[in-house]
Length: 224
Image (cartoon, rainbow, N blue to C red; front, side, top):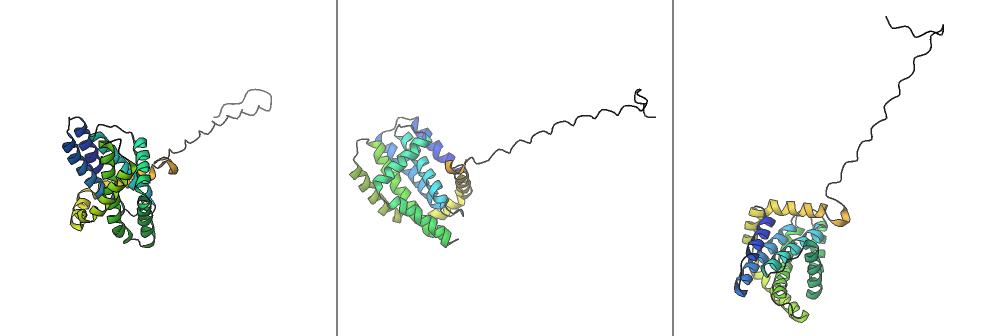
């Protein structure tokens, strides 16, 4: 089972159970942990500009999974819209992270992703806790959500360690890279992942030339 399959399977399994608030929070925290390391690993995939697409896709999947845990079903587009809405509440930090990750990857190839990984982890960790608070209490104010993001993001530094990151990379590295390439190639602005090959037009059948009339006006002699 791949990395994203594990995320979705855990969320679906939780959505079928009657969970109390403490149980929902515990499962949601596991989903946030997995998604945050996934976002960090995305920054190591050597595709410039992939962060803008792939990190948002990871966060949208995380928000979808957390929503299920709290009894809310979202499709992919709804989840992306909610991520952008929550990001606007969190402030410019989210955009700054994506810009940082992309620019370091372009100007410091091989090193940029390593520098950006803790940033991506922290932003996604903060976003995950914002989503948990949002789904647990739909009446929560923007000021509260912003405070949740700031606190969680500051705590992320003590959660992210090289040892844990290397362990996650060893276990899920291939799955995350496949996920990134799929998201980048299927992004709406870039067209379909695999463009259909144009159909070859069949050449019209050549018309058979009529045999020239015999000199004496009779029929054409048969070939010997």
